[in-house]
Image 1: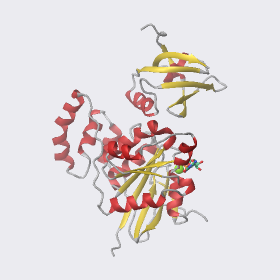
Image 2: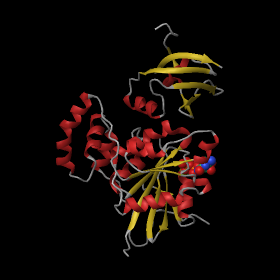
Image 3: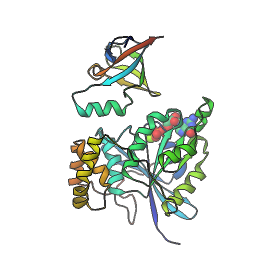
Image 4: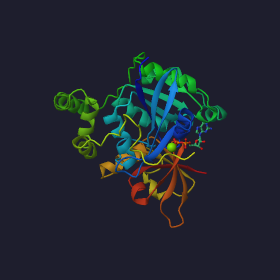
Length: 244
Length: 84
Ligand SMILES: Nc1nc2c(ncn2[C@@H]2O[C@H](COP(=O)(O)OP(=O)(O)O)[C@@H](O)[C@H]2O)c(=O)[nH]1
Ligand SMILES: [Mg+2]
């Protein structure tokens, strides 16, 4: 047995049940505070599943990663600089079309993604049927239906997290093809991005952001945010301990 | 096209249903934000209540209610499909 701790990020639109899922996963083993230098709430906690310890981070809810609000920057920077072992995108089963926008953006940044379709109970009530298998094939990553509030599907989700964290799942995330003009721009930038940034960052994604003129990203790359202190007495930076 | 003429989302009244044809915004950041909020071409919007001061207005789009100011909804073009 190793003492390896894996980091799991929870992302999703506002109101998709991320915090509900976070609470189910971590119980009272959680801490909240602010992200360094931001007035954005930071919540993280621990979860143990089949002998592995996971650090769960509840990222702020966002519709996108590109409008450069403080929330979106926190979420984007976490994916980019902390590189979680698994990112769980929590989507609302009753509003998939809207929710998949962010999911697709995340798939452009990392291939270690699981889509958790939450509020399945509500979808069922409304007669919404979701073909999770087909969705998983199309998106190229695992899709797990859950109902966080009813604690349904949590074990299946954790088993999938476990399999991905331990490298037992190969994904093939859907890669969006843009117009020929944009693809030409990407092709031109790609070798340069790789030369400057190495393999640490998702090169195609960076190239796309450069083409989009994303100055907020450039700023972040020049001055990566302080990593949260992880070792030793974990969460030392996270301010107040949530009262019980 | 023989359908209704092109208008702005900001011209709609509460209860109107509107189909988006174009999101034509000079500021690229605002355009990005509107698209990310679900105001995409082809999409349908239901106009909700206006705040007491006349601005912002609530819009139902892609299963969620989003409030936009007039200077935002001004840039969303399309046609009215019905009123209920
Ligand atoms: N019906 C149903 N409601 C849920 C479920 N999970 C969360 N909710 C509700 O959705 C709302 C938003 O949840 P929350 O966890 O705060 O969402 P967040 O904004 O993504 O953190 C709350 O009222 C929850 O009780 C679920 O599985 N089914
Ligand atoms: Mg929350």
